[in-house]
Length: 253
Image (tube, rainbow, N blue to C red; front, top):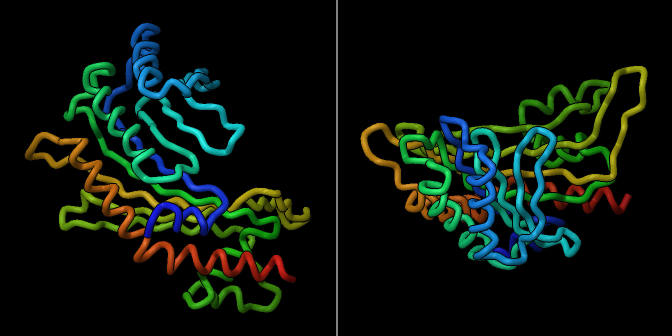
């Protein structure tokens, strides 16, 4: 499937990469600014730089048009992503630049990398009860449904997730999660249904092996291919399509 095929199935699409480190990342003014200036040199439209309340740093494009790049620097994680990119390579070229820069601009060696994540995420606009939509779409034929068949039963907290090992040494892993935004504050209060999206996130994570130097760029390319294949073969038909069909049915009621 092409990226346009994925985009047509959701309201917003995210392609993200995260480098998770063992040690805390540099926070010096010159180091932080030099890193983001180098990113901006490659992508001049990324002109919004700010520090969050938790002291994470972020550089991004204007969000007004619904499509934008971003790069973040956290305590022990470097993030890079594009929201609603028109093609895969738009995000991948940015991610590769970050991977090329972090060894000498942020002193992140292969020894310091705890894991590398490649994530494809989707948002599905849904104004109804998210828990009910997720349960109906994904749990109908599962063992969990026996509880929902009890008299008066209804799902009030349904955000399923699972992590699976994809290699014999379990260093290559995949995680799928679906997040409900419906909040329930207790049996005496009405549920708070917010006008937000159901979020689906699919991540392929690679942990470095202990016997050889970790090649982050090589691993990134391999993870991207694997993530695209699994999205097309497994995630879209077994997770995305049931969700979109159930949301569409709810809108008709």
